[in-house]
Image (cartoon, rainbow, N blue to C red):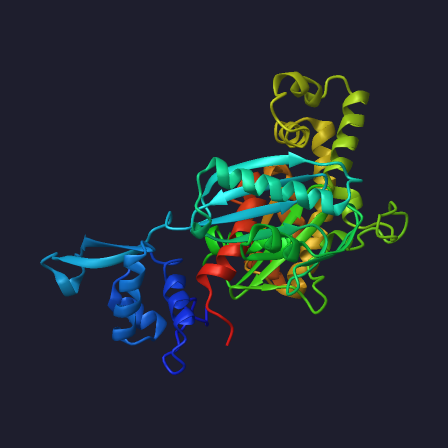
Length: 414
């Protein structure tokens, strides 16, 4: 990697907020760090480090402790004064707005979930009604967990569809029928807390880059599948949104140009018409109806606690011939789409979330096989493909990460 993951402070302009955030950013990558190491990583003077860390200690943001140091330079193993972030010093709130559902979560400064709750709403509900429900849910979350509002660093919202990140505007959410909904303004006015909004899959990519398996990765792609299929990209620690905030609409990659199923976007043969959750479940159930000996029929009773899509992937992994063939076929189409993505973006890591995060070995192995077979100059051989480490919680972890990134860790733009 050619670029340091640490943020430089600013002595010249004495930007205190910038310098504080530069210090805080170092704690993302270091469990324990000395004042001298902070000065080196942030390029701030030792005096600035001493003054700012003293303030942070007084406010309880960081903790000080003696850690035994047995490095070569300190062969006697004398205790060394080290600093660490106090993850419970502040909290963040993450909101994921899905299709007919929203989730809210309270997290610590490392995006560890302290409390969360799921809610349902009718698809034809007025957007303002849904946002009012979200406001009520956030207030209840704060009240139930006895959180002082001063402890909240901000609220991150991952919204479906096209999002104007700078204005906090949900420009278009086709499945919800939402257009130009000012989510950020409404929430900030009602809750009096800083709010930031972005596309939900982009927040998941950010969450993985900050707190998950993508922490040391320069170029990361997060692929999410459920009602639709989307992607989020993080390049050198920064979310990539595209010129019109439309980067990542991989679900509308056309993989069957002739004879493909009609897509809600108006085209035919889009990826999400083949590998969305509802399509896979519907085809699997049809196969099970035609084949009474299918494992899927048994799992409907024996594994009733699992989501229907999880039972499909389990049947494939356990050798159901009918389901396995269908799942491999679906995985092949995702592999085609990802091979094109690799040829264009050349990521080091592709993380699968949503239903793909629970797809099992049959689906993931076939996806990887197809991806590697179609990429140019063996680029696919250099890509790691793996499920998200956050499971179904990737959406709320990502939303919280959005707030943590913008209101806590990252320095102000210069």
